[in-house]
Length: 70
Image: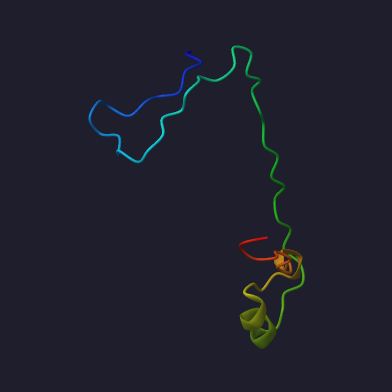
């Protein structure tokens, strides 16, 4: 297995694209993601679900971003 990043075929890179200047480090560790299974529980009533964008209360996360330019 190679530790280098696959490059675009010759002539297909856009003039405004910057190629990745270096390959991955020699000792790049393998990562494993953990994603728990969602347990079916309480759900929102239709009107609240529509306003929240989800029927599942545990997925209803408030937007806390400050917007662009901060």
